[in-house]
Image 1 (cartoon, rainbow, N blue to C red):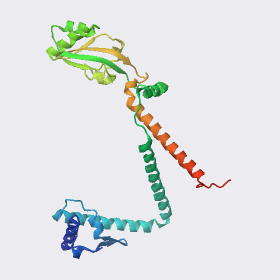
Image 2: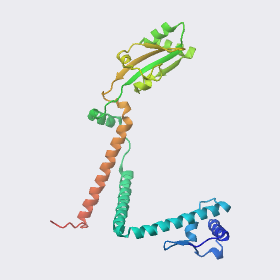
Image 3: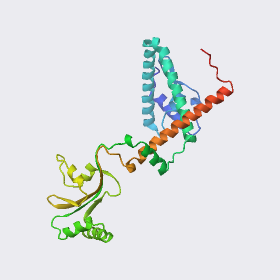
Length: 289
């Protein structure tokens, strides 16, 4: 290895900085060797190409120092590996070539996908896949739709609040909302989307050690209490463990599945076109067995 003093490092850094301005001085216009190790040489152009923009002064010197040191250590390791594993060189070259080919093929397949795959799926396409594969989608826990209201213990109109919550009347539902807004009651509404039953329970004063599956049997307004609050809750719909997963919880999953299918089809189609064209042009020769 060639030892570099501080002046040499500064010269290299200066060349790096000036190169960015297209003003390399004549005495640095050459390509001097910075270090030698493992039968390889590191030159100024190699160092210039790796120094980050904006690094200057002592920071640049420190970077050059670190880079040269790492380069030397790497070359020494490669040299020793070449000696110790010379008998495996053919296998390593084969692995490298196989990896190179795999990267090229992957890049080609990605080109097919990027230029020939529609990523938009209609609701009908998603529903069709769902209906054809329902048996593949099973719940591992209950999911529910419902609503929870929390209000202070001792609220005088609690009975009216419960009646309005339970009613199917539009007017009563309007009253329920007005009461909650006026009194700033906390309402957690899961009626529009299926949610995991454990998540629903998180909004109630429940204990992790207790089983609450019994409350799934009723669609009526039920209640719980803690030391400060009263809770009314109502489960409008439930799907239990082992039931088919609701479609709305699978839309993104099905989109990914359909996209993977389209990508695979695009790759196979282009592969067949490439093969057919090569056969027609006489570019393929296969010896008969």
